[in-house]
Amino acid sequence: MERTSTRAYDTLVESLAARGVDVGGVEERLCSQRVETPSWGYGNSGTRFKVFPQPGVPRGPFEKLADASQVHRLTGICPSVAVHIPWDRVDDYGELREYADSLGMKIGAVNPNLFQEEEYRLGSVCNPDEGIRRKATDHLLECIEVAEEVGSDVLSLWFADGTNYAGQDSFIERRHRMQESLTETYEAMPDNMRMLLEYKPFEPAFYHTDLSDWGAALTMCQKLGERAEVLVDLGHHLQGTNIEHIVALLLDEGRLGGFHFNNRKYADDDLIVGSVNPLELFLIYVELVEAEESTRIDYMIDQAHNIEPKIEAMILSVMNLQEAYAKALLVDRTRLDEARHSGDILGAHRLLLDAYATDVRPLCAKVREDLGASADPVSAFRESGYLEKVVNERKEGVGAGWG
Ligand code: RM4
Ligand code: MN
Ligand code: MN
Image (cartoon, rainbow, N blue to C red; front, side, top):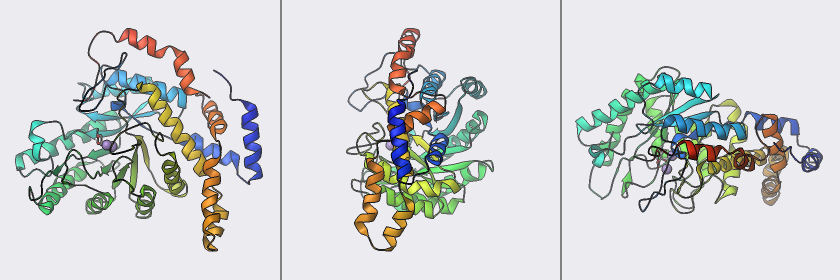
């Protein structure tokens, strides 16, 4: 493995130290950063027009874990994988857990799937039909059991529930139906488990969605109890929404439970993290840097690759998260505070720009090496021969994907 270019690192450390940055402290924070990758990000996915299958794609949850462990091996900060049920359903979850252990990995958030069955045409937990709501709630309860079996303490919920036309159903009755189902689910969770509630303004429902925004999700969490928290998916806002402000508000309410990182240009595009709007990602981390030490936040990626190679795409997302976090850690908080209090608008703004403009790549490379990972994970992955190996091994059988 190639060593970090020490000259670039030394120069950076020198200039950061001159700016008064505690480089050791920053490196420590970077070493403890964790990002969970999604099992579904390793399988085939696409748009409603076409799914382009990729050679070597995993054929089931075990192989998805193996691919995820490559991302961890090379980045050093991704030891857990979120699963989606039933996409990742297996006969023996204990075996899946043991396999994860054998790879030095853990299973993270369990995501129930309440959007791919015939019955859910009018919704799952908000469906006007009581029997269908029962089926949906039973699936949520099943996922609590799965979580216990795989050793996870996070139930992460996203509902496709909503309506397509004005008048189709009652907003309020639907809200009450969801509350009833989630109350039952919440009460069934063991004491150490948390429920994350994800909002989304549209798609697949186009008139309204039952959890359309952070306010709808937050008020539902407040009704359920303190182990219900809001999950922010970066692709789930209307254009122009100030996501960092939402992050700050949820932190202040003590209800920011986690993230689904991805990036988008237009809608819920699920592209590589930081590929479209890296400044926004940095500004989100600026809000997180101080608050995260006193609260548990689950940092997860929710990404679906249509044409790009999956493992590399995941690695790139993780590196972009490392860099955004590193830059946010460089913001001179003391001077920022002073500028804010003295009304120095552009002074304050420029402190953020100074941190954002810093090339932190040598620092991140050094931290990855300290973690036993790779200074240059994409090249290391390409040189490892892993992809060629799995393309060969996974020739037989059907690649895993949506549905
Ligand atoms: C949704 C949402 C959920 C994810 C599904 C696959 O848009 O982001 O988090 O589980 O997609
Ligand atoms: Mn999501
Ligand atoms: Mn989404």
